Image (cartoon, rainbow, N blue to C red; front, top):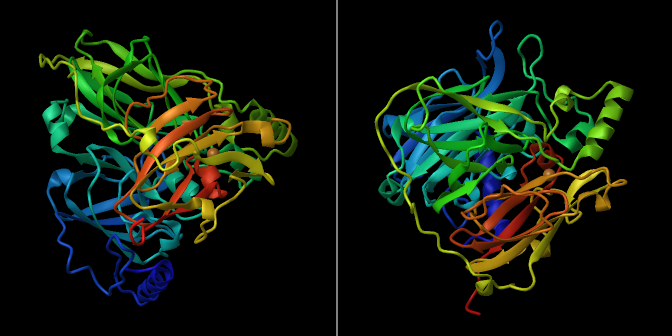
Length: 525
Ligand SMILES: [Cu+2]
């Protein structure tokens, strides 16, 4: 048993060892164990060297675009385990089967501190990419964990405190796809008919280089918004398809943009999966909201179309509840000339996300399964606090975004942020909108993310939007201004310090993030 103080001390030893140039291995559910080499008690099925490095990619004709990029090399595993997306700045797609043991030797080769978070994966605290584990350029952090998640679409991205926004924006993000036997049995489209689509927005200057925030506080409060929509790192993305059914996995990898996704022709969107994997059965929506960090999986059947048909996935206009910010932002832009170009495509504007061209005929007929999986629903009555949710107010204080009035502290955890192992809790996020802001000028959406856990949505209140998919497992939920959302979350397997935060990366970077501590139950109650 390692208590937190010892844990931090050991982590410190790890840091010293890092300075000596050794590879540090941090292993185990009980906390971190530093070693001067890879663990000799961990036998990975999959072993990957992953590097974050400056690079250049062709995005537009002319100058290549400078990016920071994850690049992978397979040390042990098969080719399907690590797939590059050709011509993209996105990191390689990592594929693992549930139950497999994965080792990832992450080397930082960018001129900035960083660490990698496995978004949605249920892993020990030391494997989760908390900002206290950042490494400088030239160092390596070894991740070793067993994949315990359900089949689904997870992803990885950097998580240093205060620098996540610019690093993700610079190109550092990739998918981590988990498969399992239940998914295989569901008989969904696979191989080349199982397509991942990462949606992001960017601003480019006239030399094709990425433009991020100027450092202006008001811009950061609003969150970065680009005026070019990229899919898998490409602008004006067209997906060529055959006349058959596809599985489309969509990740919103944007810093702060929310998409209200719909088919251009108004066809219903058929949702088969969410953040934590497959739903039990398909759900139909006329549109769906996808906030930063969220994933959704669609069944898309193009068999009813003739070859030559062109359609598209669009983002419909919606009220992002931030007219105040827009107004203030524009005022500042006019007055000071310091705003970026983000206001030219505000959050809630309508546009085409990607085109779909039906290019060839395929006689394969696949029908939408009635059931994909089984989800055991939590019951609020099994929670330790059924009538008294642990509440988290999301509001502005001293011109910064906070959770219950607090901002991030690297190692601190408040008393009301401590939970017990092996308990189910009700948490409630309350977007207090402009009620605590300046003259109601700061109503903003906050997509809230918990590290290390998949949870279930219990109830939404004050709802002003639809298009949410609450039927499945989630690790990120969108809380629009004025909305309150109750979730059920169970703490198990791995004690320790984890994060919860707003996944608007500019909000996160300015401190809209806190630790929560999962404490081991000592003795029997
Ligand atoms: Cu936020």
